[in-house]
Length: 322
Image 1 (cartoon, one colour):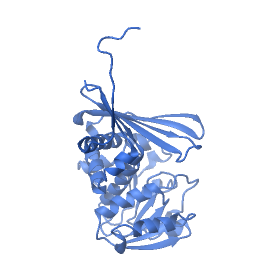
Image 2: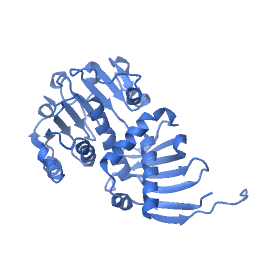
Image 3: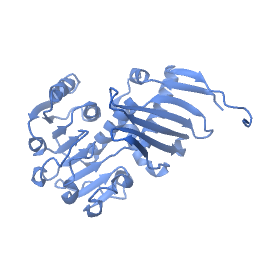
Image 4: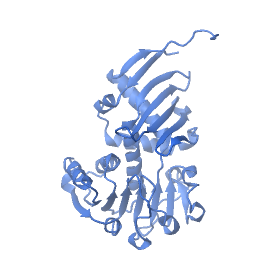
């Protein structure tokens, strides 16, 4: 049994300079192979209203790996969210690595959102309404723009504090900036109306963002954080999710007009978008299989690049007695 544990930091991961399209390939691969994964529901422990520990395990026997991701939230920390991943060798049970989960969480979530846009967006989508312009929105656009390097976009940014200005600067520093026009919107209605794709990564929304009439025919809604679109659940033509159990508890789940998992579209058992008028919403709540698969790929890159710290773990050689 390997008794060497590799510790891979956030800095180590960023120095690997992983291509955004590689992240998209990784999430696509896992979505296609979801039926081969042992994927229990996450455990959420909330000792107080504003503190939580989320424990997200999964086993990937096909790839001979398993792991656990732990996400914590403490409002007194900055940033408030933090995460780590423990990566195991499925054949032996050996702990292979302890890996910072913050980069992985952000990039796999952005890659999944970009995947949904490429899968369910109408063919000529170009206007994108974006609400919540933090790191998660940046990751989504980083992957999406790499996927469509020559496509012209109009990005309608919901104005909040100075986030819309910082987001515009971020995109303008990318190699794809010449293909993008920006509009700053004062209201949710202005952001959503006439948009082909609506992306929301706002972490808290108390109510639905706007009434049904705001959502044009053919639009796609990708709520990275799910709040704000409950009315869409009642009249959108199709609703997709990364996992059924993630949305089964939604208030209107039993009234969805047409529901399926994203993986069912990828394996051909269910149709995705069938015409340019369908309104579609894609709920990707987050699957630890992505985190564990990303962790394994990053582990292999780190080994080849001789990055990360290795420490020795020496388990008992025989049965341990007290």
